[in-house]
Length: 423
Image (tube, rainbow, N blue to C red):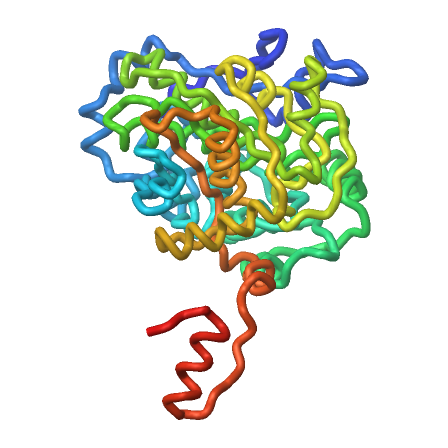
């Protein structure tokens, strides 16, 4: 059963009843700041029920943490067996960087191969309790694919506003799941159309449409908490020293941080990680806000990046709060650094991740080179999606393959030319 209580502003702590509240807190909102609302629970009651033993006896899943999720009725749960993803310790790759305890939280093992499944499972399950009929999102990738899949599972209509540059793999996924995909010429134009559809048609949003700061669906963010829960459990109920997260809007980073804080306050786990947001150097709205010591995230100019999934011009207040509260930071990485790490991680550890996901590992390497990481500290990188979501980005960095005749000398020459490999 759920012990969900109410919604609370992450800035002014104003409280609101549970409901379809997707545009942030109205009490402290101004022309620069829109604070997210977050879900709260009856934590004192949960303390009497939830403990390590109870959790260890349950099957791996987002829904093993039922008491700390906002869906009240079991029959509302929409699931494709998301969650329970592995925490992989890197050996060869971490040795190359001089680190002893580098872990990858591999979210590509989810049903639509990204961490967005956790969000959409919870968001759409809660939507059924609001008796919604149509769900919508603005997305050029993973969020759209996950929304389409879980809407299909729930028997709901789905409309996705996307961009013309969206890779064919993502479009195929969205359309195959039955979504009505609408390409729009501008990024902000998508949000304006989505906003009107939410207001006029009462469509249920699984993502944000608010400016100048995104707010999104507070119930979906609760699904991201389970990443933090799992990391703690997989490390023997102790949080790592640092968690690196690919950073776009920041909901995943905030949710992970919130989840770890909840387990600590319930006495189930110990430790508080420093949260590190990794942004593409083409953008960096969080980096900009931290450098300027702002209490809000202002819009920045974004240039094209191979890590388009995290190429955001703005970010959430709750993410800024999480990074500051944890003593964290933002670090930016270039496309070249991202693609180099993507291929090295695949070659050394057998993990092929989306370029946006590889940003988190590129961030580790950069901080290590700057002397900001100790060799002994426990570090977790969240990789949010698999590389087959955008294989063309990788293909551009691989050698061209010419067909050879079945002759011995042709083989030896090919290996030397293409790979500098001498058997």
